[in-house]
Image 1: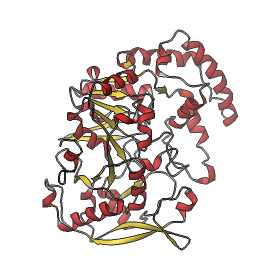
Image 2: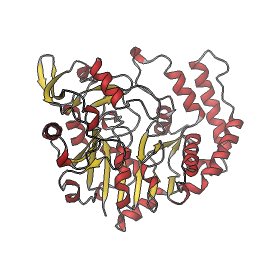
Image 3: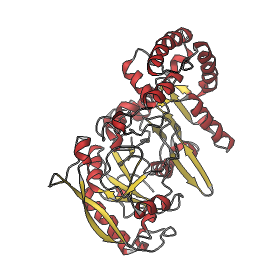
Image 4: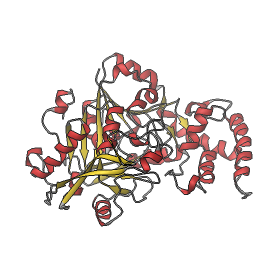
Length: 438
């Protein structure tokens, strides 16, 4: 069995969806194992652009089964809108997607809580929530008492369960707001969710058993991460993180597949750095160069449309997440965005309180004091979006990638110079040596 993971190594938005789409054809199943509608994966095929949030990026390949597993939290109206959009464009979702009955559901009270709890961010700095109820849903999942799983929608006691939850949530919401209109109606919610349940029913199944059977029978599995490893709830820049394990350590828990079946990990990173929302960002460029990267890279959120903060590539952070996620090789994306710059810098270490540091700090306040120690490399100032062979890249572009590889400690196996499938190249035989054909 070939179990391959695609993991984002930064603060998300690394173009993981494009790589998953490229690799899907050689796999039997594509697995989305964590996150919710806060994820935004963009896949470009010719003149068609697909923006996916819940559904795995492999859905655009016929004959490959796509699974949404228990680690994901689902927003039913968002999911149905996504399904309808794909069906309208001729993508046959009905025959190749299964959603776990164990996946938890984002409910109206989660959206209300998210909005009210984030009206006044702690310490005046937003953690970057998309206000889609993801955090409150994961909180209820861990708390258990008020959690709702997809399979619960089909149980006879669902209306009574909603009534009990709504009574408790209305008391909570009343304590958070002076607005008497912030009140949930359990009967209205039951009617709304009955409609969702009916439409989603053909997709609902036991993905855990299906995946275990597939692994034991030698099927090829591709695991698609959402967000990025620096947003991992346990290992990221806490509290400026997401609510799930978005690094490689979350694959097994979210999917239900034991570690023995996962043997290859591809780490995806942009050739520069971006992040959304608050939190420290040592290499951030709050100047014309940062704006140039933002404009050239179209750095505005797939899910929210928010402008992303931009900066130089941080090799300290990516070396940390590559080790954390067990990465075998790097997929370096959006190299073309840097093409017009005369010089490019890369962070090789931090200076914290006068001391050079090569490891990623565990505490956010230590990271906030980190000053990047930068190396300057020559740019190539040549358009590369039409380049289709790694050997044909400018020497300075290859030199930049080689230096990143040295600093991170992993070989570069994929290089992207644009959003389309065709704008991707595979240096050497790194992926094929891993058993991944391209």
